[in-house]
Structure formats: C-alpha cells, structure tokens
Picture (tube, rainbow, N blue to C red):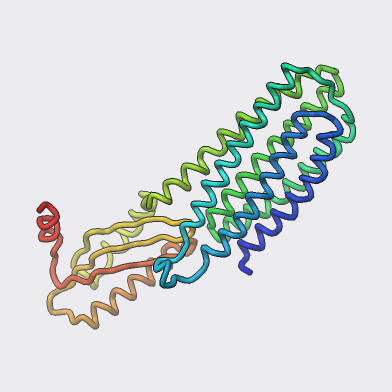
Length: 297
C-alpha cells in the first residue's frame, strides 16, 4: 500500500471516530452547529473512502483498456470531494435557517464544548499529517483532503466559540447564525477544489513558470538546433510533456535518440515532485512551418 493510500486510511479512521462522538452529542444537545459538524465528518468519511479507491486505481499501470493509465481519477476525486463539501454546506445552511424559524434551546453545553475541543485537537493533528504527505508526494487528492479537513478545523473552532458564547450569554440565536457563517465558508472553500479538478480533467497545461523552466532547459541544450510544438498537460500528480526536437541533418537516428533520452531524464529531475511522461518527435530539420501550413488545409 502506497503512502498516499495509508494517509486516506488514517483520514477514514479519524473521521469515523469524530462522526460517532459528534453525532451523539449533536442529537443530545440539539445544536445545529454540532450536528452540522457531525454531518460534515460523515461526509469526510465518505470522501476519504472514495479517495482510497481512487488512489488505488489511479496508480495502476496502463493496460489494453486504459492505454494512458487512470491518473485522471485523482482530479475526478477532487471534483467529487469539492462537490460534497458544497452540498453539505447547503444542508448546514438549511438547518441553520430552520432553527432560526423554529427556535429550540441548546442542551448539554458542557459535553458539546468538550467534544469540540477534542475534535479540534484530533483534526489539527490530521491536517498536519496530510499536509506533510501532500508536500512529500504532491498528490492532488491528498492536498484536497488536507484542505477539506482544514476547513473542518476552522468550522470546529467556530462551533466551539458559539457554544462558549451561548454558555456565557444564553443567547441561542448565536448557534444558527454561526451555522450560516460556517456554511458560507464551507461552500467557498469547495470552489477552488472543484475548479482545479475540472481544469485537470480538461487537460490544463502546466503553470507558466513551469513551462518557462522547460523552455530554458531546451534553449541551453547544445545537442539540438531548435525545438517547436511544446505542449504540456496535468493529470493529478502526473504531467505530460510533448515536444519536437530539431537536429542537424547529419545526426544519426541513434544519436538523436540518445539525446532525447538525456533530455527526458533532465525533465524528470526538473520536476521531481511529479511523475513526468515525455513524448518527443525527433526532426532532422525544422518542419514546424510545413506542419502549420498543412493544418490550415
């Protein structure tokens, strides 16, 4: 089992524990904020389970059915995770509005406060762990999971603050109002997760800064005379680079192939945080203008 999958197992274990304790206290206390946090943890569990499945299959080698592998499962998982966060935010918003309309007192405040403190400590440790794995692997799914639990950390802090204020002031409306604030925060935190995943599914190119690094490497490559048709795309932790390399007409195919292998290795060293896939076309002369003319017809 790869380290990314182990990270999702840890996430599932933590989420399961938090669902049980939060749901129990949420039902007993009648707090919308605590109940919303419990539902969010339940969704966390579902998302982490799906991430475990996605990571397990995205790492599979290419086969006859999927010639280029299944790396796009990573951005797909991120889109699904972001969508679930957004839907859960809408549910929390609905529950908060319902409590404002049909006011009901919050009970078992001391138990609720203790559970939220426990939740913050556990979630904080999980966020630290997931951020460490995300930086080590540059895996999009783990990064999305870390961001997801980070929003939980903030929302748990907000719930704790609300319960503390209700305990001191007795003003019950604090609970649903804060529930609305949490819902809005959750919804907007989901947008960048969904956006990044969708862009990768649409084969977004590498960042301009990364492309410039590739160009600089090729510009300083003495064994080629020029290059053209440089294209890149991202798919989770995988990146794909295709380029036409132009050689002197006197260079043999064998020597050109050796140079291409060296450049491919340099690309991998240039982006150690990615799994780099390179496709090179070896040209004995610059045919870029010829190809461009053909595309016009």
